[in-house]
Image (cartoon, rainbow, N blue to C red; front, side):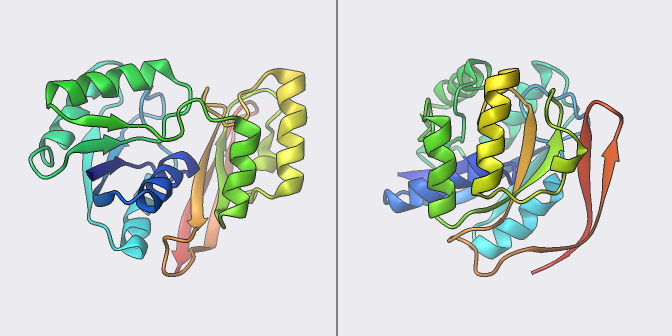
Length: 222
């Protein structure tokens, strides 16, 4: 199928692209929503501008649309973005894992435009998923945290097997979703098999308010 992939630059959306490509699908476009508010119910916010770099590294055109991030109204903004490609693709690819809120709304837009909604990660086992990401060569950084147990030390941390073990422990103690599907954290893919080269962070800073924080990337090279 010809697909346009919704991407935030994080692990889920890019791993969905990776799986779709391995499955023989043609990824025609990457689609990114840029929320003006970090309170968006639908869209990833930290360092979203790096999706342009990822798109260049994958050689796939990126289309973007801004949104206020206001609940439900942001769906109209997503519709405008999908409308730009609906005549050139057969479906929309998402990295949704367990959020019925996101899936139902994206499904509704796809149905409106007579497009398939493809979600290859839907209900994947979170622990197995992390190990698949590591085996597949994904280099993943934590760029925001907003849940009990995830302190500022996680900001900017690269996920490895030790980090996965720590996340499993936090899952047991605080019931956070192991894949962050509840918004407990956000991620950024710095390297993966689809990139011609990896992204190296040159300058960044941690912003922490005592309960949640963001790793703000200032400069990078690739």
